[in-house]
Structure formats: structure tokens, C-alpha cells
Length: 215
Image (tube, rainbow, N blue to C red; front, side, top):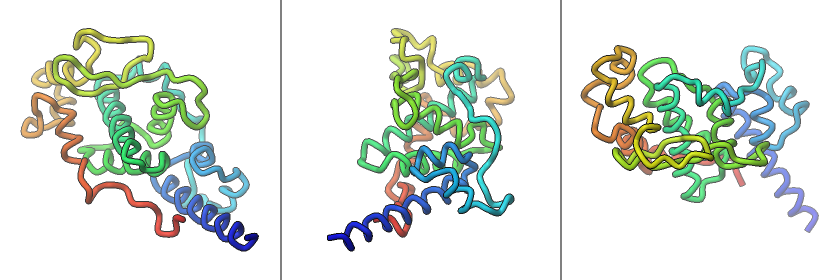
């Protein structure tokens, strides 16, 4: 019995190390990796001793105020990441792996430098789901009554129109804003632009796979 417990502990530790490595590859800070894996700061500093291969340093983002002041493209992409996370998690995928999978999907379809960092994505998901370090949720996902896209907004809001929908606003501004045109070429612009992302990303071949050493 003791040997089985030791084996299970070893398997969980190896799995945590594999997840930590993936997070670091995506640019996560030490604090983010700690919260996602349960590994201590000392364990992570030992794992990432080489300064060029280790996690990012600096202040961790707080998205509660950032989201409401962010530009339209950032709010659109933040919504895409959180919706992708929710859909992966709803299939029973472990939350850290669902976050990694959602962020990798996002990176695969970025036309330019990603606007949302992995730490930002983690913070947005945490404040939307109440996971990890968050005791009370700040965001929720609403469905636009006009374009039917799912998007991120304040938990205190329950929009009855499409006024808050970043996808509707993006569509209406597409012909006027070169930045939006560069991010979303005309050939990919559909009436429901978010569903282009979801349908393009949402397939078995792109679903995240657990690290090879996972239990």
C-alpha cells in the first residue's frame, strides 16, 4: 500500500513538472506555474535554473480593470481564449491542460504578435471561473442576442442588446479600422466571427493531450 502511494505521488509530481515545462514554454511567470501545478517556488527555480530557459519575471497581470480599458482587439481575443477554455474544460479536460490547450489554439491562429500573454489568459480564466487564487468571480460569459457569439463581460452586467458585444463592434468597424482588417482578413470575416475561430480550432486533432508522463 505504501509503495502504491509513493508511486502515485511520483506520477503526480512528474505530471506537475511536465505541465510546468509547458507553461514556461508559453511564457508563464513562476507565480502562474505555482498556482497551476502546486509546485513550490523553490522547486520551480530549481527546475528552471537556466535564465534563458526559465519563466518570465515581473509583476503578474490583474485583469479586472485591464479588460474594461483594453482595446477592442484585446477584448475580442480575451473572449476567444476564455470561451475555448470553457469548452475544453466542459469535456472533462483538467483545467491546467484546458488552459494550455486553449492558449495553444489561440497562438495557432494569431496573424501577428499575440495580444494576450499566457499570464493574462490565466488571470482572465481565474476571474471568470473562480479558480486557483480567486475567491469571487469578476467576469462572466454572455451570448450576444444579435450575432450569438459568446463574449466576456463584467459579472454584474446582463446585456439585453449587442452594445457590449466586442464581435458586433469589430464587424461594424472592420471597413474603417486598418488594425482590425490586418487581424481579421476579409476572407475570414463571417457574420459570426467568433464561430470562425471556434470551428477552426474545435476539432479532435487540436484537442490538448496530457503530458506523456501524466498519471
